[in-house]
Structures are given as structure tokens and as C-alpha cells.
Image (cartoon, rainbow, N blue to C red; front, side):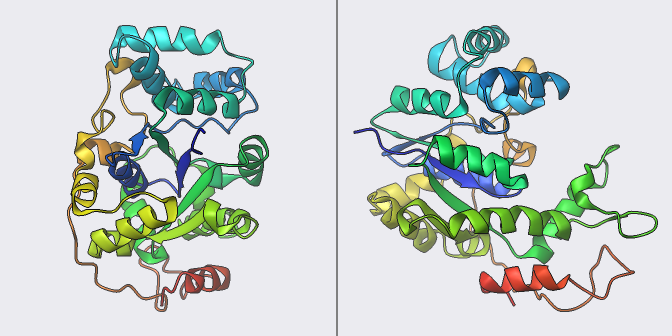
Length: 300
């Protein structure tokens, strides 16, 4: 019997990509890059989105196809992967991820999806077409995530509207809006799923107590959590996708992870929900809805 795929769902950031690679080092699993398969109804639709983004949206998908079916992650392999996908333009994302899962069996497919939380229709498409999928929802304190996101956006010439507060005059960059939007969408979906298909993991717990956090995820999945498996999972750099790819598909997942794919236990000092926002001098603190959602994950 084919075991259901596991998707790490979260807002953009290096930690989700790192966790997918960590779980992919378990003897029961194999990680793939970001596939973004549920942004469109078909592979052809996804290819059209990719064309509008100079191929960025489909880099991970093409790297996966090149590694699984073709001559590997080379420029020639990526070109062949583009043709492979074009011949399957009428396939749904669910059909393609099931094909990948069958290719990897008996290992379980693990991937990160940092796009699906942005829109409820992406989530609906996933759950309608692939109802057995398992979602591991990765959360982080909104203050730390917003600080890291502001740093990541600092040098960008274009910042997506999702990160801007258009109620301000002039519009203000405020990543708490993105934090709330993605996590609220994922939490709403998770509330409708059985415990066997949805679990929340806090990044802080993974960084400070990795053995306990990983053992908890393994217990949820029904995987062994012996010392050898726990040690292997703390070496995400061993993933075949834990490095930049060829020029034709350079990334395929978070660039911060690709630049520094290792894992190290880290002491995280507790963040506070109260107090002013470092990135918004015109606001007294987090919005009420952000505070309410963050408190559900035991942030203070």
C-alpha cells in the first residue's frame, strides 16, 4: 500500500526547507524540493505560471523530475525535465505527486510547500484531489519571523503586495500581515482534518530540542525514532537537493537553506508578543488577530 506523501506547509523561509531535508534523511523517507503543484489545476497551468516568473516557480519541480527520471540535475537534465512536464500538461498536481510517490516507494515522499498557505483555493485543490496527504504545519513566533522577513526583503527591488499594509498612507511594509494570512489559512484547513493528517510543529522546539521534536514527528508518522535515525535527520546537508542546482534551475527551494543547509541546535531566547514593532513606528504592536492566533501556538 502506497504511504501518503508528507508536505511541510509554512510561510516562506529556510526552516521549512531544512525540516523537509531533515525528515528526508530518515530511512523511511526521501525529500524533494518545492513542487508548487497546487497553484494551478494542471501541470500545463503551472508551466504557464512558471513562464511568467522566468521559471522560478517550477525550478524545484524540474529538479525533481531530472533527478527521478532523467540524467540528473544538470542543465541538460533540466531541459529534458521541461519537455517531460510539457508532455504531461493535462495532468493534475495530485496525479503528478502520486506518480512521484510511487517512484520513491517504499520510501515516503517529503516536500515543502511554502505557496499553498497563501490562498484557500490552493489548499482546497490539494485536499480535494489528494485527501490522504499529511500536513506538518511549521510555525514560528511572529516577531522573529517578521524580523527575518524584513531582513530578507531589505535588498529587493520588488516586494509582493502580500507584505504591505495598504491601509497606511503611504503603504507600509508589514510582514505580520503575511504571517497571519498563511497561518490562518493553514489552521482553518487543519481544523477540518483528523489528527493523523495534520500536526503543528514550532520552529523553536525543533531548534532547541531537536531530538524530542523529531521523535514526536516520527511517532505521529509511525516511523522509528532510534538514535541512528535521529542522528541522520540532523544532517539535512546530505539531501540531494540541499545545494544550488544548475544554472537552468538554480534554486527550487529557499535560497537561504541552499546557501547554508546544515542544522545546528540553537538557543532561542523567548520572544514577546507585546511591545512595539521594530519595523512599524506608526503601530503600537501586533494586530489583535495576530495576537489571538499566536497565542493558540503558546506564544506569549
